[in-house]
Length: 287
Image 1 (cartoon, rainbow, N blue to C red):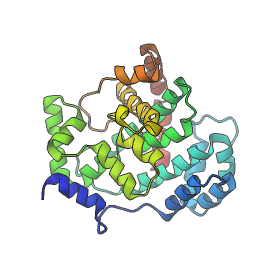
Image 2: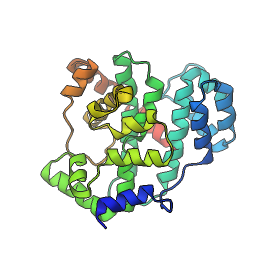
Image 3: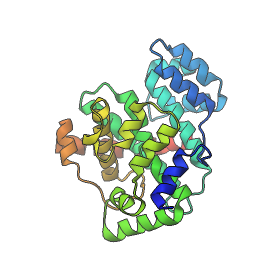
């Protein structure tokens, strides 16, 4: 069986070895899809998982959010930082926890990987602000989970992925190009398949699936995908964490499409550097 067929079989087989997410995540995603869902509905769901509840409260009260008053309940957190933001934090922490114990076979440093993911999520929120997009809460989770395909490669296909990383570094080639060349599928495509396996909605799945070729994303979520593509670039420019890419992709086309100038991008990179300690603290509180 060819390597790309093995990868697809891993994700699509009903007997897959892939981990499943906690039941609370399925329930939260179901709640998020309901137009009449209230903050109380969400708070009641999260409140059933004490570990997640405690982490959300610690995060909400951390320097990352910089709130003036202490938040002492999930309902209060939803009011202060937003319905979708709390959903994003809950799902993100569940994914972090699911893969935390997995062996990455020394292929890349998990702490650096998660730092990059959090940095990208933070950059995505800043890009959304600069473009006047009202998607800040939603886009955070897109940034947080965009690179999950790399974890699947590292955990389940370590030998092949080590070759990909070494070849990409040696030839100074964009990582996703080298993945496609050697494995027949890149990490963005695999992230999309993983989210499909987890029954994530298109609003989460498609921006991750197309974060390296956002102009090809279905139009409904193309703006989201463009934000993640630019956020990924800006996070790499700020050198927050590292997720294995030896080459930083060009950004002129995407920044132009989003209407963000070179000066605007420099400002976001500067803001990310100023947030570095808060991003590192975010990681400590979620893992």
